Image (tube, rainbow, N blue to C red; front, side, top):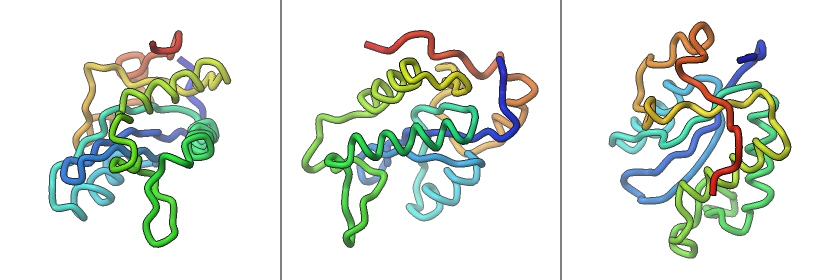
Length: 148
């Protein structure tokens, strides 16, 4: 598995209080989950799905999702959020976000973006992935074909 020199995370999250799906990118998954979601909501939150790899490809994946799903996104104070508007689109789940992203990863292709293996999910704030660079085969797998 070939990891680039600057890597990051793309995540899919289900907000445990709001009951809605969202997504985002980060360089530090533990801090983002703890300080960005758990602490502000005063509740346990988890990343349902994680992808790791070249930060420029991760950023491009997020940009593509935002562009293509713009009409599904929540808007608050005239700002588009990285959350699905669950009142208008309750049928959209994390699985649909995952399917869209994995089809993009496979077909575009993003050759340096990897899926975190299912046995390591959901992810709770911790230092669990501290050795991901040194042990990538244990944590990551290729997106070999689009999900159905």
